[in-house]
Image (cartoon, rainbow, N blue to C red):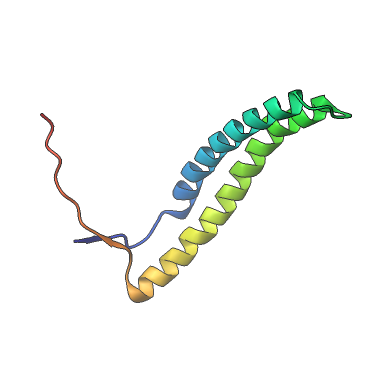
Length: 93
């Protein structure tokens, strides 16, 4: 049995922020299609916000919340133990 004792806060938050940035871009692309096919007083603004603003927002918010989550996990894990999991070896054939 293995236990995660702590997370490197900045590194973990940075990786998740990049993943959230990608998720935000995918969602922004979907919203761009919606904005492009719907009458809107400023369609270019909606497209720019969904392709640029949404991914940046997802990345920043993801970084902040995961950094806080890692910090809290490290505090809790130091007192009651971390998440326990079992590893098995994987043989390649």
